[in-house]
Length: 283
Length: 268
Image (cartoon, rainbow over all chains, first blue to last red; front, top):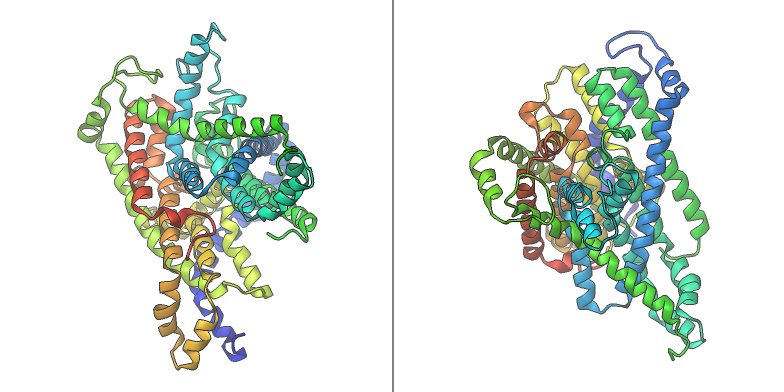
């Protein structure tokens, strides 16, 4: 389409960002990787002791696995909430859709600390849930949801729901209404239409949402520490403690590398898998 | 046409959808209600109401206000730089499917899935080894990396809807690439650039992990300061700060054309 001679010049506008990312993103990560093989931050020589210490210790390994498990739990809960929301969005008129987009964006655009604080007020002692449960006679004593795993998963699912809902709604809105009318006209029930038409066609949005929610929930330092409480330790807090708390820089670097590699590998593999299965579905 | 509907399924969808909407809105409402409490604890609902914590916030909270100012400065720098760099890159890569473009796009998007705490530690190690002191500027550099992917996504959504023939016309009429960029491309993708800048600003204002690694007491940002308060003593002033942030967010959303946020509408 464009002249061949202009090909290199066409990339030129991307050069400043490429240079910036090379210096402020790639270089630091390379140094992080290098430091993780050093005995200490400013010490010479190479060692794999930090990796051996991290991977050989059941405690640290369980923190890593539990962080990934938390991410998966949150992804599943957001999927469960986002699909009904998406189906309502799909059937809504333009005004209703605009309102729904506003309601989805409002929490996304509100500060994470604010949203986390809200969940502390909802789940905490004398919070909304306790008050409601007592008023309805469902519980005679505080439910202690704050600092519990259940409370943390619910809070993270709500906080990251917009990241699932936006791409999912985008996919759902692109589905040709004629397909649905054809399926219904041929006698398919709405549950059947959902399973055979809507679900497969909405998968690209769901996949994008899953990746964003997983990446978000596993690194959600604020919510993990404030709603999860001191007894649940996840990788971000662990890295923070090891680095700034006890200043084991090289060990923290190794933990960071393992964490980043694990998350990136899961995201990449899931993306590849999803794409190979989705071939033919128009994203 | 609709005789074969599955009533229980439809009903379940509507009920679950309504619950999802409640779940989306509930925390915001709780925060706003909480900010008008007259008590010293986070009891919900409060037993008596007042605006005392807002008064306390604006008259007797120099540290919170200083951290808010630091956040605004960092966000301003990060927004400017990430919007400029991200827009240029998105325009260069828009609509291209060759290997280099796909690879560059993946590279530019990778901060979205790279754990931010790891990136924060990486930046801290580099600065420390290079002997560079932590400042608002070094913090802003980290925020640019975090915010730029969002700018690129927003701008490329707008740029992909642009007719590439327009640029060929401009070139055949003798316009330089730079001239064509400012007179044709930029006006056409303007809404994408504006939404990219807004999202970049909100991302920076909201960001924690990199700030946590790169801040010292002088450069503490608002979310870090609020986190420290909530970790230690649950000061109710956080509710007032939250009320201000919610009000500001709603105001921004109402001022900015809402259509810009509707998926798939950017740039039209």
